Image (cartoon, rainbow, N blue to C red):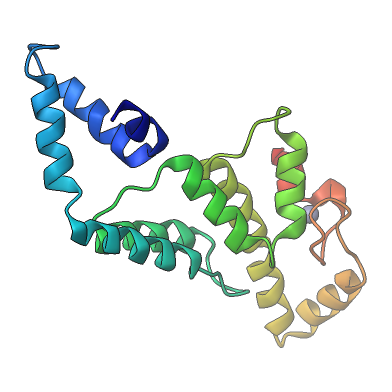
Length: 180
Ligand SMILES: [Zn+2]
């Protein structure tokens, strides 16, 4: 049973919370764990796990969509399936879903990380949102009809940032580079 417990983060979490709540540890603990395992892992829960996995794999991000939505989509899948997704898994899912539209942002973030470390949900969303905001501002300024704005936009039009890859500013003006 211990082996099964260690191999599944969800069961591990279940055991950890049982230990936390058992004030007379270790007496009665085993009983508590068994009771919880039986309550939690009825045959129907195997289906719930698969549904969660399918939902998580189906999460995508549209080109102009707020990257913050990715976190909400994961939380929504968790809520529907009544399952928990660990933060490291959340971060991996966000990174995967955002990578088609934010390859430079993610590459730059990974470059700044300590070797062997992965970005957290907060770190990913912070950089993704910054890039997204830059993009939205650029889009807005190009949509403006006023001659000044159009002249400004076309003057900056050929510029592309060496750091984040977005058009409209240079590396020294890059909001992501300045913050990094
Ligand atoms: Zn930039």
